Amino acid sequence: MANRRNGAIYVGVSGNLQNRVSIHKADIVDGFTKRYEVHSLVYFEEYESINDAIAREKQLKNWERKWKLELIEKMNPDWEDLSENL
Image (cartoon, rainbow, N blue to C red; front, side):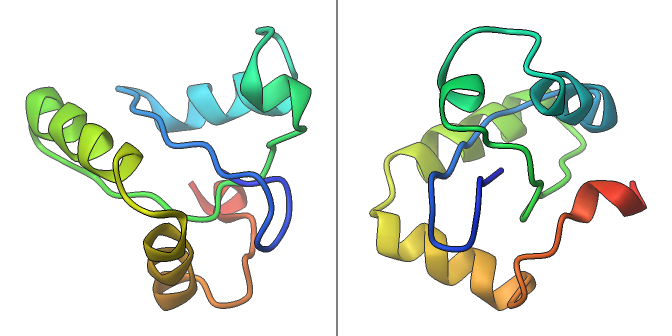
């Protein structure tokens, strides 16, 4: 998730993406996404196993920012909010 193109980026994992995005958009939980108004789902991946999803989350969190930006740009060059089509 991001607050704007090339802005703050949040990487997380969830078993219910639609619900998780709704929580972030509503600023229900104090933390990074509320503080930086991170409300747009700009990239996501789906996994069969929660363990695989968690492993990927950890991998992405250790990536350089540049790599994350390139990943988003490759899938979503206009940085559209993908949550509207979930």
